[in-house]
Length: 86
Image 1 (tube, rainbow, N blue to C red):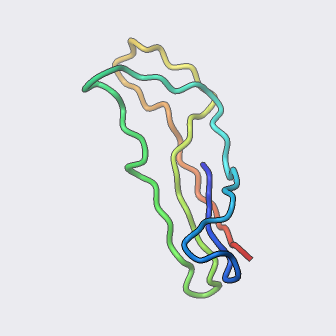
Image 2: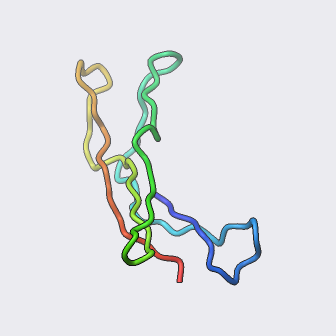
């Protein structure tokens, strides 16, 4: 989970360097072709109306080992973070 943004004084139309909020903890490899699991469907960011900071949510691969032939596969977790760019 990486986050990038820009402060008010940064060059317009450019993001500052991203920062890692949460590292993945395991290799994620599932299928090929039409069986590939999608990532990113549950990511998002929202501005906190009170503080002006940002809340972001993203998927990451936890430290688990799921058999590639397992019928049920859910090898990701969700991380929520509050971030600011000041």
